[in-house]
Image 1 (cartoon, rainbow, N blue to C red):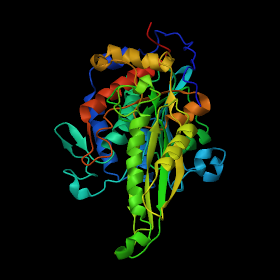
Image 2 (image 1 turned 90 degrees about the horizontal axis):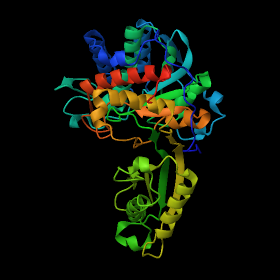
Image 3 (image 1 turned 120 degrees about the vertical axis):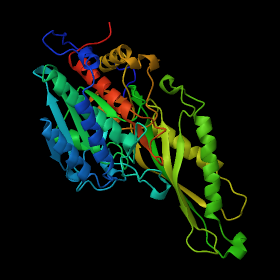
Image 4 (image 1 turned 90 degrees about the vertical axis):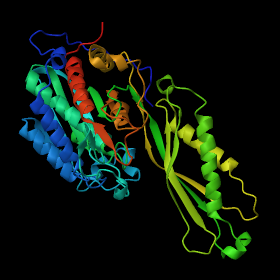
Length: 445
């Protein structure tokens, strides 16, 4: 488990007057042509229903646009047999065949660190599309907002980062140190970390990473660990008129759901984490799927629920998983002679991270935020209130990592998902300045 007290060394690269200064990216007037192109690209991305397993068209679109802008592009698919060395491959996931990864690079004119943006190309289902005021794959603009599945999570943040690279190229050319890249990975909504692993396996490394997720436009220095559970209640089916002779799995599942609600409240009152102190629920337990029953007129013999148990980055996942399972089993009591059986499986796990706020990346980002108009919204460092792709590189290489992007989790995974165009473009400017500040080794003094 990463040490939350780990201290990263400060950059040893002094600023150089011949190199482009990050403030110029904020002080220059907005380029209307670039901004219009970014909005167009975002609309094109939203128009592609890139559900998990169907990411190829959007990856090809973005790779083509980056190539047109003169950036170095590498698009590749990964043979799963190459990834056997990492435990994430053994987790529940869709096959990687036909699901490419793209890595887009922009290199400066002098040696220096590498900063890698990271965005997932997949989205969750739109559900019942008749419930949407604007069609989920329309990308329609209404009142300064762009609507559609993925607008906020995470196509808006993705386009903001691509725009940051384009603005650096347009304003600075290659007058900066090091390399800025963007890896567009498959499958985060299906299995966290597997997509980033494809880039790591390809040989891409980074000194710093910015994970593109909706964070209200402000950088976050940590993300959650998480466990996905499947809880199965097995009973005995009988005719409904003699239900007392059977064992009702649905009744058992109702009790499971009630116990999980109690555990969420209890687990959120202990072992506080300052980075998550402002969130009403410290350790969310979210059931997102329930199924049970086969035939009418009979007591259900099998019911199941699935969901996520999300933790703080410093939590020991095995200990907390064992604690939830032990408490659930001990409290599972039904007043009947033939009781249903309970089975708990953990089918996915992802490690969070916590980057020290004194690290070079955090200091560069905070400096830019305080300089910009966003300073009025800046209070302190917080953690991102979800899991994301940041834990894998942090765990393997101790990569300085932030989560950053326009939009809010309150807009994600919902009907009429949207992103503010103004926020996407403003965040793009901030991230461009933050990247240049980091690569040139600048920090608050």
